[in-house]
Image (cartoon, rainbow, N blue to C red; front, side):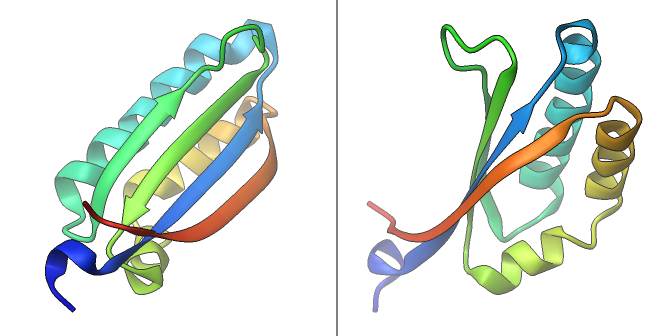
Length: 104
């Protein structure tokens, strides 16, 4: 398989965030996203998305080389910081979707 047709590993977690802590949550989420892309060779994309009309919902769209790259992400200091912030802010992770995506 060429690199262009190699399936990627996609993770889409969904979070429920209380209005009073959304700004702090987004700060922590963007820190995690920036470090994931900058510091992890296996992370190709990490978007933080606030869907229209769903003020209490934040989604991540993460693309990794493969499941192993995602598993490595789970051990990073920046994810540990994000998880600590999430716990402190009482944010609930409600859904996580995994899948493969062929790179264009």
